[in-house]
Image (cartoon, rainbow, N blue to C red):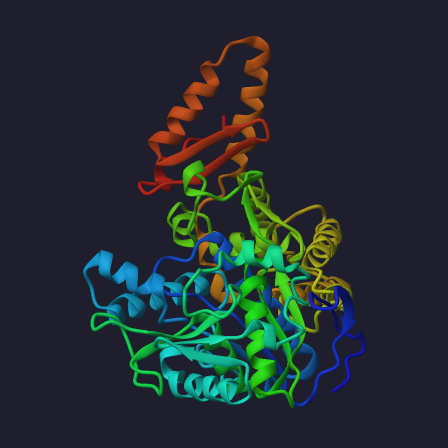
Length: 480
């Protein structure tokens, strides 16, 4: 199927926006690096999951749900996992099983749930050890890798194209990779394909002794096994561009020179919190579960993610979350009973233009206002809508669902009270009090909200109200 509007995507490798021309339009193939399962997913981990979920939805819409294959792996053998299990005093299998379940649960809350989807594959690294060994053997046979002291290393000098994806100099790459200086390396840039394991570490038999794979070879082997020597799109966070993706390209192209590996490389930018890099030392480090437990709905988190283009740094703020909640509540309220039809073509066009989710959301906001005005300036469900309103509403709802929003299974959170009117009133009282110096009404409303289990957050940008662990809607104060 040829799309009416060609899908154009920014290729990190060529640094240009290119038209997607699938190798096989009957099977568009995409691989995205998944989680290393040893802890809860933080906000930065979740961003690529949501970004490439939207791309998957777009590809399925354009080419048909049976003509897209999406692979996102689980890394369940890696040094961080070994160290965390040892620190916890538990078996590695127990740690990875539990944290994988956490990942699935948290991502499902953001609208990313592929349960029962036959076109989605989630390979676990430990299930593909034979394929990794086979690929390493091929690299040795072709002169691109060598064994030394129980290790097998890739010879970076054997691949002239190394560094093309990231565009880094050798000096920058050495610094960026934090290369390990080891006597068995021929060159400081050479990276590990296989490493020996001690008795208390996970290991598998191999031609080089009992050991385990290096991180980079895992994705190369799994993508080859499930998608072949050439596939259409490889995605992940910008933090993986070097050295992980650079190493993937080198080892995959050398092991299978007859293929192209990935045609288009896509990278989402990093995430900030309130204008600052997310960091435990700054106290602004959040997992997805942290926000969900604070009462921030998963649909709201998704909306905020999509409000910034994937190629730009995204800033998570309380104000954005409050605005997203207000918009989603209004849309869900007004569209109650509406049946989705065909997505508005303008939204499809925005998404086809390098996955411009921000433009798509802006357009939805404009159409939402049109529906609101045609409904007598009301967000209540219309009692007797005309055909024009029904048609536009059906296109609106279908377009929102193409973005993974306003899905029926994600709407339970709207059953909790809307705190926005109280937030706006508190902001008004606070502004008046700053002029009069009489903060009695502000303090009274804050106390009443706190008594109801609401966390009150005030800043120069406004007031945010977040339901806390002891939130009791029955105790909410009347609007003063």
